[in-house]
Length: 425
Ligand code: UGA
Image: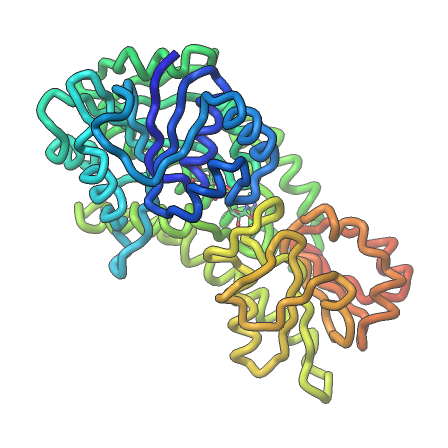
């Protein structure tokens, strides 16, 4: 059993803390936010993540997991200190490391020759070197990027595809290997620089894959092809793979947009063109603009101010996170064009960035609208009753960007049904 301090209790930190505690380690979560810490200490999760509440309660009650908003050198002698701080984009696209460096100065007092500082945050190449220069002599640094998806981060923690460890001389610290001893997946031990770049490369490749799938969806519309059969058949080639090949309204969230910006900015600084990634980013912007354009054309003939019902406000289903959500962007474009916007999401209770009225149910959102646009594949949307749509909407038409509604049954119920990736009928 290792003694572990997790610094930063956001999505990554909290999942990591809970996961490591569940694996049998003694874990303390540290965050400056006293409100967050008091909620977590009483077993109340501060983020929506399936599976997290149960593990949080179980491990705080058994005493292996605790939280604090202040650290002193009188506390335990930690074997591992995980840094799980946000690295948001700066104006120029590069990652802002201020939260990370400031966290290091807060916990510096605890670090001894016995401690390994583990960088979990997504950080640009060179960050491990920077952190090394900020900690006392003799402290070991490891780069250990996370690959957790929001909405399934607890599952991902316990079922990784691989564990990546960047270390001085490619020798993984024993204490970190011990922390992961329960996993039987490949452990890639490499240099710090490689580990740092692996994380960005993985996210960038997934973003490229989705952008390509989105372009195929537009091409399918023009060629009267079936996009679902197309991506299924293409993805069955194991060299390509079916995952992250599902077309939609564009990729968003707190990771892909930020990480692609950082990788592009770094590559540009180093004089290495990354044209494929640049094209994927532009393509993603175009996907959202094209979607807004399609909505505008579908309500073009309406004589009053068209009302658009946006179903799904988070950047994907299964999370309440609205950061860089395609819905926010599309709503902004439509609102800018003079349309009236309403929105609903089963998990989003507030969204400062949404350019519309936030509704508390699907029915409230559909009422009085001229088009409903499905932006995420939330379970609640899969079972929308067409008779409710007919009853509530002024002009019953639906645009399904995730292709979760059975087109045939919807069309037969008298609703105009459009699907991203399918020709207008
Ligand atoms: C992503 C990566 O998947 C994680 O491996 C990584 O650890 C994480 O970023 C991170 O860097 O922390 P996440 O942002 O939670 O995870 O979400 P994804 O499930 O990857 O989805 C990202 C965006 O792509 C969403 O807008 C989603 O709707 C879109 N997407 C995803 C598609 O449009 N089609 C797909 O087939 C998959």
